[in-house]
Length: 238
Image (tube, rainbow, N blue to C red):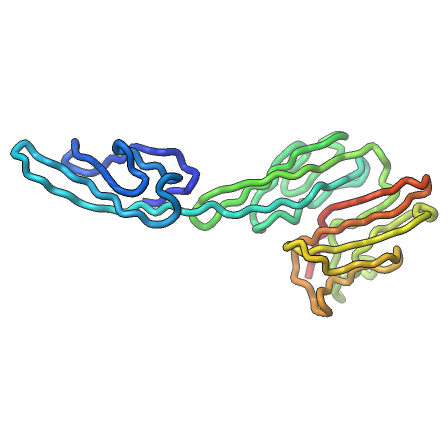
């Protein structure tokens, strides 16, 4: 028998003759509590005494599986006219995103509307145990004068303008300092530039970074002398 660590306590049944008692890790009053027993395989004993006072016992095991460790991306800012946003960055990969404006792993800002939206990422491990995390997408009414790609392909198969990752600004959008920082899934900074003309080429320590989601942080002073910051996830495709 296998259970997940967060499963509810349940009554132990199935041993015969009925009317005996169960004992073992996580067992109290013939009820087994996975959280009380803890992760691992536990030996459960069933004891029965008949009307003549003769005793008998048997044993079986219950395996309690751990929950997956799930991590979500940071806060994402997205303009109302920014188009569909591919949801990436949650780990481990292979789970499902749900929330207002979410369908098929895509976030539609026009469907969600302006404001803050809580997005849930749910992942199940090989044992079928599930865990989730949440993050926020903020949809603003500001038009997307700054265009930030949500994916790029730094190979000969990618289109020339999409072989490096960098935001696209309209002329005059930046009047002050600018930074672009890229972090890998572990939160390690792998790229940094202060030049709007320089983009990330998909490498880490001069080697091709693996395909997947990477966190970006973009800061600059706009034409109205207002500090701007964009944080999100870009998908590196190979």
